[in-house]
Length: 348
Ligand SMILES: [Zn+2]
Ligand SMILES: [Zn+2]
Image 1 (cartoon, rainbow, N blue to C red):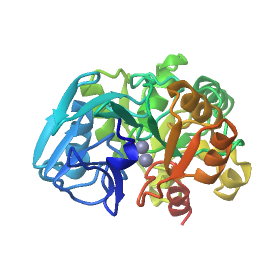
Image 2: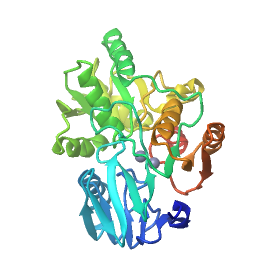
Image 3: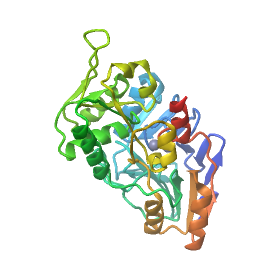
Image 4: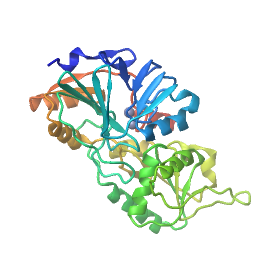
């Protein structure tokens, strides 16, 4: 049985399946790509052939433009398999965002699972992560430090709703990533019983509409209205979702004395929230936290784990103590959502 390191290689463009002649989430345009999910660090433009779930293909078309989302697009449903030059490809839910998939590859009796980005927390907007036993598990490590423990999202929503009740004269401006986090927050708020309209910055609207087309219930969503008079403010007592950097834009001045919130796994780090002037940090993440990373790796039972990006040193060290071999792949160009770079850019 050939070990996956003989048929999965790290090339400058990314992880390459040699016998199948395709890349997984390559960072530049290639002939043949399997795409795990629609975030731009995984779904790059201008591949010739793209294989992904139907939702991921739709997200790519919406974000990259129809003409740049792959010349030939092939949708593969969760749990179904196809063969590409003798390599069996199956997409399995990753629980990260709508359409997100782990890429399961089988060749000559050995199996590698490339998990893309994933989380284990419940998320009303996508199917839950499904563990697949394998010989090599390829994982992210965005939050691979023991300090990162994400509380249940519902607990964070209760904190947000308490603040809304406490400050009826102020708007609540919640910074959140446009693909995934935004829709999850809306669905979590609905689950927490918030049934009033939720207001969206223009940058959040397209992905919400796409989620709704795919049957995700988000309730009533409205654009942020313009003030009628100069100096007037709007949306006191309401919730507004906007990109993480929007609170520093002139755009935000139309909101009534907004309470600034930010939903990110990084909000676990208090100094970071403080430095950004976030009044209400919400620890909501679409990536696995430290306990979930370790538990997932134990669950899939792989004797060897390859780490794509993040805090690989800490994770590989912890794995060694459990007798699991770890290897850092040092893939370039990863982390679009919830990155330090993202936060830094928002700070600028
Ligand atoms: Zn992602
Ligand atoms: Zn990513």
